[in-house]
Length: 113
Length: 115
Image (cartoon, rainbow over all chains, first blue to last red):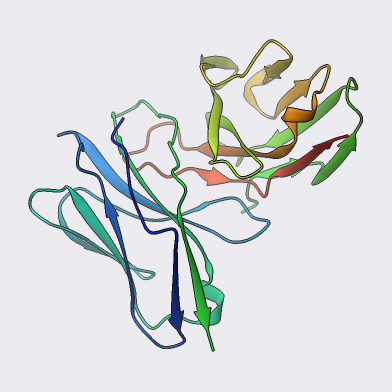
């Protein structure tokens, strides 16, 4: 399994764009990059997933360079409610075969007023 | 649509006692997973059901832990006898039968405290 490295914590202010970078030097060819968000006293929640280049949804954007050895989760105009732990996960997807998720230590994002 | 539910939300027991945690997945989700986070550590996989069958139980720490999913609906995780190191938050998650995403839907967790 590819190991991921991300900052332990980050602070930001309301209205700013936040970029959280994850390093995954040993990513395999068939691995996807997935980000989860976890609020206190809740289970993790899927945010976004990508394989290469850029993926955008209503919540975030995910930037993946050509070598795929890192990825950046971008949260536009954060609010206080975006304060949470953000996990970067790397793993393969097999059609018709679900797999366990491997969580790292995550990044604690704190949004300040 | 109801999400994944877990019961109880908290459980405090004494060492040596038995505790049973329950998870109700999202209706139609054949895949059901158990994870746990012990104090200060990362969330770790315990096991994976596909319907009523155990697909992968490589993360189960020892034979004091028993998971069942009779009928392929809800699941229970029993710890017997509980030890101090079993304290932590136990998460259940479920996912669609065939998904091209690593998207699992997590419940709120059960916080287990063993005294």
